[in-house]
Length: 66
Image (cartoon, rainbow, N blue to C red):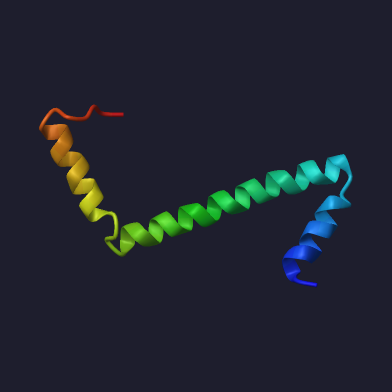
């Protein structure tokens, strides 16, 4: 049995309250992982071109600010 299958089985056996607690923890965990990935991409310069393109479009009047 794989780790994923073991996790699926364990999660399926949680009570409603435990499932809620797990769900909240997992959402935060996934968000933290996403934040780390974005930060790494920024530090590595992988988003520089997209940022410059957005700036150019804004200055040209083709995009609006947030």
